[in-house]
Image (cartoon, rainbow, N blue to C red; front, side, top):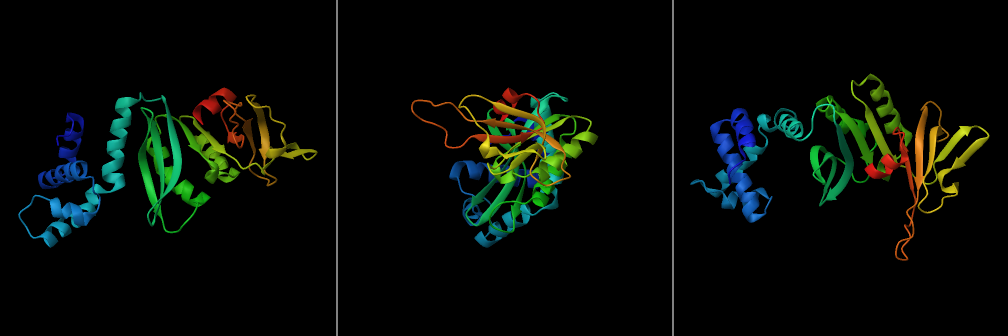
Length: 263
C-alpha cells in the first residue's frame, strides 16, 4: 500500500526509515486482513523473526513517543484541514462518545466531506456519560489547533447543561476567531426572561414544522451563567411519522435556520 505523496512527505520527515516502513506494513495489514488485534497482526507481519518478537515489536512501536497525538497526529490533522479549508473559514466539530467493548471512547471530530473525521479522543476510565471537566479537557487542545478558523461545536443531550456552553462563551470572548456552539438540552430545563416569566422547555406550545427561537434569555434556575439563545423545534408529520421528541437547543448562533442546518 502506497501513501499519497502528501502523506508520504509528512511521514517520511517525521519518522525514521524503519518506523515508516513498519507503519506502512501495519496499515497494509489492517486493510487486507481487517484486524486490529496485535496478536493477529503479529501473526501476519512479514518479518523473519519469532512470533513473540513480532508481537513485542508492534507493541513497542505503538507506544513510541513520536506517535503521540500531540507530536504526530495533531500536525497531520492540521495539514489535512489546511488543504481542505481556507484559514478563516468555518469548521464544524462534533462531540460524541461511544462504548467499544470495554472501552468508553470520548472523541471530537471535524465534519469533512459528509463524514466525521476524528481529531482527538480520550478513553474514559469509567462507564457512562462524560462530565464538564472531561468535555473541556477534550475541547481545549482542539481550540488551540484550529485557532485560525471559525468553529461550530455540536453535541447531543449528553452535553446538556449550561456549564460547557458558558465556558465556550467565555472562550469566544478572547478567541481571535468566533467560536459557536449548539447543544441539545433536556425538556425539563427552565428558561426565563425574568423571575415572573419562567417555564420549562417542555411547556412551550410547539407547532410541528414551526421554529420557536428565544434570544438572549437565561437557561436553568442557576445564576451566574448569563444569557443564551434557545431553539425549540419539532419536525412536521411525514408519511404518518411524527418525531418523538422536539429539539431544544442552546446556542450562541443568531439564525434559527442555521442552527437547524448544523444540528
